[in-house]
Length: 145
Image 1 (tube, rainbow, N blue to C red):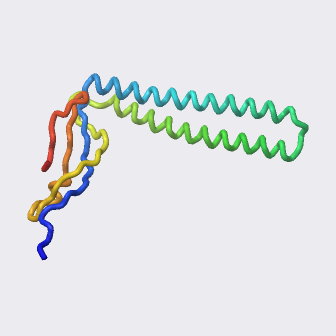
Image 2 (tube, helix red, strand yellow):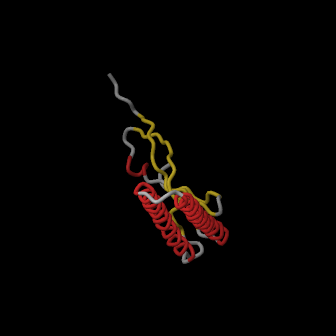
């Protein structure tokens, strides 16, 4: 019985962008928008906590009310801490983008792509593929397609 001579496989394709004024501006706007969303969510948590506290303080003092207040504060602080971590990561990205040189290539992420490999071909070479983009337009395909 004869074996197969070719096989369809999936690979990760690296996407690189060339830094341009347009890309830099769009990326900075996206990051700033994410920061604004986090700030809005943090304010929303503060308002919700304030409302809950106001309602709980109207009730007669009891161990259950004290426990609820404590629980609400803990949950709010935990959520705000996670949001602050996200904000700090985005601020780091913002700083990194601001320092990028024009025409520099930077990794933008990965996409999955399919390819055919045949008996006798170099699988490692076929796995190493990059797409280089400038302002959304493919400039170059690198590697064995």
